[in-house]
Image (cartoon, rainbow, N blue to C red; front, side, top):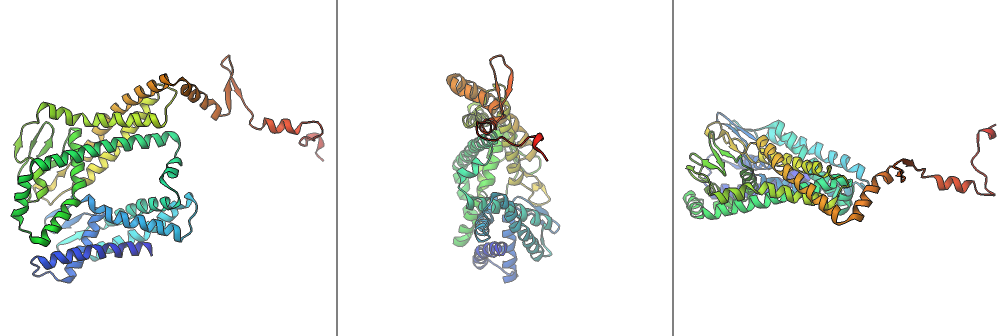
Length: 426
């Protein structure tokens, strides 16, 4: 029921938008079945399902903002499933998410088969896999949130993994904010070109509204490209093109207003101060993440903190690489077959830059914190032996403690009979 409700609700939301565009624009040869097929295609595109065009390659550069629609609906479905199914244990959340994701993946595959036409064919494997992953993650998180607030969910993790997650979130937040600022600044600098492209399309009132909605859906893609720009490798918009802090070389671009933020033709590198400021963003993000990691869970071993800082950078690099891979994709089989950043290059460079900065910052912050607070250092040093049931004497020897020693002494008090020994066996 939850999977079907999410699917029907998504189609009900998208179909009126497609219908409005069909009414406002010339639609010769496209009937209502074509409108429904287009709405299904948009719903599959919201799951990042690619399309194969007959004789024209693939369309894989899809708006990441559309993922919010099925994600939000599946989040609510997961909460409803947990409450209606009377799930009361965190160990059962995985089963509830699986119960939602399995039929939802089947429904996505059925929609991919039903929306095929001689011109466009959605990818069936991607529809099944993407539907399952989005439903499992969004539904599982929604179900877990229905059982407990975020603070309690975070405390389920041990202190060290929780600190790595916090540091990774901080580094990603700095990269995301810098990418959003860079995207907005570039678009503001090219605002006249944006307005001229928007006017040249002649979309009309309804078409202009739909065009604005499409551009908002592509904002996460633009932010991901800007993040890869700050890392250094940059991104491409066509075979043999590049946009990086060291320079840009682009060919003709499609008439899409958001692309006005890209420099046209070949340009030299940015001014020295601007390039240095842009390339310093990943190191600032790593330093911020390393400090957050130490604040969440300092360690008594000075040499261990940098290792956990680099782990924070590695996690940031993995997330950045996935975002870079999904923010681009082909736009046909011609020159635009390569659009967007390289996922493995962005992930590797982010791991090295953010990881090194996070390691240095974590080591320095951990050393300073322990030096300023000797009592904290002593408590952390004593926590390890106490947690394993051991203590150290003055000579450095390990003394193993019996946690049930008090119970044994109580049993041996005068007038109380101790536990039966071997001599009392029948």
